[in-house]
Length: 418
Ligand code: FAD
Ligand code: PYC
Image (cartoon, rainbow, N blue to C red; front, side):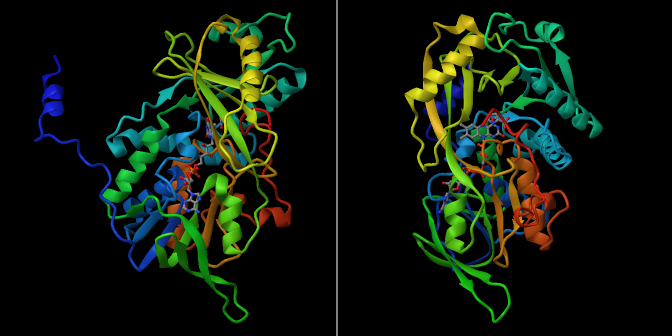
């Protein structure tokens, strides 16, 4: 009998502890204002306070923390990217994830599963071999696996040759994992708040005060919100699906198209699938959560809109392909379906660092792949805001690269087919 729990539940003397301090008024001025209380904004605030002692910081979110894509993603964490810049960057993130539960004193349910990207064609096998070689060069455990070996590792899949896209092999990535996404947001938020950062929910940013200084680049001086205008020494924009619109308020343009990405979960099933399985050709991916739900998704919707509507069209297409991969789940019921808005860049890599506005920094272009990057973004954004220098780790992701035509082509590794 969990007596302690019963006592906790019944006694007024044991209230559930408040995890975030109660909301306060906005101050007139902050050293740093972070626009967006998703994982990226909160992680930045956390590392600013923890590693740099900077706490005169406000995180502003128009809704509730983690209510954007941080709380809508399918929680896949991996570093099996294609470019050296991407591999090093996501590897740092995977490493940071290892200590987070201890840092936060919170169970993130981080679960290493192994990640398999299926190849159904010879050209896909070639790409998987390429990714494996780049990964191995940087010390990351990825390898090409041909069908017989794969079948031993993930016997649940349909290996029949009598299908449209028979499975030929896979890129196996041993560190591939899933975690509890809301706990990541809350862990960072609570950790930042405990150290003095202010988190203001229901506070929408509606514009910016920018001073044009004679001949010098324009400079940020303040942030306009639905609760008044505040002065800001520096600003970080971390608003994922709203990146293009918020940048427009600051007076510059991003090479971003915003499209919905949908996902769904099944009713809970007895655990049968340990691996995370992705197929670009079938436009599906699936893992089984600790609760037994199959967490499933596919490609982005083919139209640019700012909405999070679930569609029958997506569900039908996804299930058709899921049944090709796991034909025995035909009777399984769907429990929930949802969508998030994803900010897609031309090269499927993020945009991080400086902008045309002095002291206005950006963390955007996270499309369908940014949950896994939450810790590294927080750590490197904080370093940049604290020192005023762009860390080498994120320099390749500068907005300027589109002007210089130095793209970081990650289309083959960003997530599922697009
Ligand atoms: P968000 O969590 O979206 O936070 C941005 C915040 O900004 C929001 O809370 C929003 O309310 C706020 N905001 C917006 N405009 C304003 C404004 N004007 N003023 C104030 N606040 C504002 N990535 C992976 O790595 N692995 C996955 O498996 C994965 N699966 C995904 C599945 C789906 C269905 C979706 C939609 C995305 C998936 N992603 C995945 C991508 C990932 O979720 C995002 O890239 C990541 O969560 C972005 O985090 P963020 O903190 O930048 O943004
Ligand atoms: O980034 O691995 C990923 C991912 C899978 C599905 C959506 N994003």
